[in-house]
Length: 345
Image 1 (cartoon, one colour):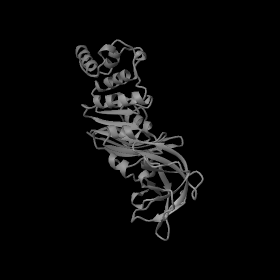
Image 2 (cartoon, one colour):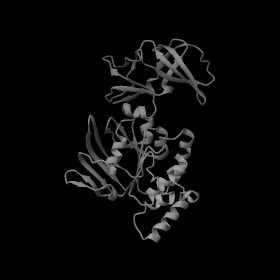
Image 3 (cartoon, rainbow, N blue to C red):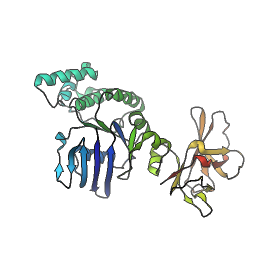
Image 4 (cartoon, rainbow, N blue to C red):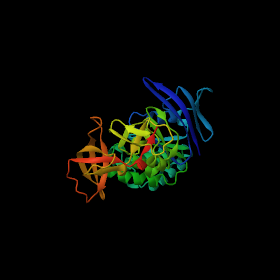
């Protein structure tokens, strides 16, 4: 199973430029709000038409601007789960699921619908209307309607974005169970690290309409290569940087410098994990004075937010110390462990 996407689309001042090949399984589409994630899904589904390019699913052309091919949405074999599920409000759960069956006699369609009701644990809600369902029941109904049509690919557009944290956690596990037997391609749009790590082994990062190469999720989170990667991976300590003539890495916004850590790649920014920020009550070699702005208790550690007094007015650093460390002081000395620095394009 494979999905090829290579498209461009201009929408006012926003330009979408995306190129990737899904390796199969569940591919995460990761990006901040306004990155173009939902626009991408609409182009793949056929709701929006790209200006140019090509979309191919399992060797079948869905869109090709050069050949003037644009397959309508209903013939693409793609199921879309939108943020608010788009259930038919005047139909019961049973009728909503029945509407998703594509092939077979009426008897066969009814049989498939009853099987889906059982598989998705919706028998007791079969005669209810969407407005009377819980969030979990709505999601199961929408997903049952999609999968009963046996699509070649499923697009999930931030399916948990409108839920409180407790319900969201429940539905993440529920959806993982429901999709466990699906063998087609899945594209999951999200800006949440937790969702991507739970569902996806590979991901495409989108930044201001442009896509980066497909990469392994574990690599993305542990060794980000760009500023967009680092932000989406949850890193806080990110800043512009440059290499000085003396071979030092200079971070003007932090007011810090250190040796180049044997990096041979060009870079414009650096990223430092919290455990790479060395915090001391006394001055160490290469350390700078910082004002403590806040302390938050975590699991086995305390996170300390600090403002570098030698840096920019709006710059901050986040470090951590063990939970039993006394952290009532308002000023500390901070340095960076060079081995922890990640260089970003």
